[in-house]
Length: 112
Image (cartoon, rainbow, N blue to C red):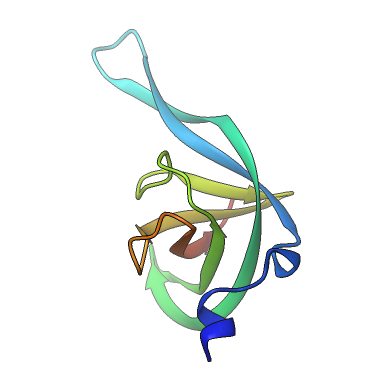
């Protein structure tokens, strides 16, 4: 059981890009939000659950995953992870045992 919560480094086989939001003035008093890559990391990505909900009159599927990586202080909700064309919004990021060895994020896969 401890192995599941604290995976070996060898299980972190997915290379993900960490992206942070950037607000750019749009010239009309508002801002346009885009994302820029701020880092790369190795992680383990595990399926947790999925659900279907209606958005703007059509069904949308949402997949939830647990992403385990080495601890880093710049990962938080509001940022996202990219795996090729796949995008994952970070919903929570926590260091469960406070040791700063591992960071566990709960993410939702989103459409690009």
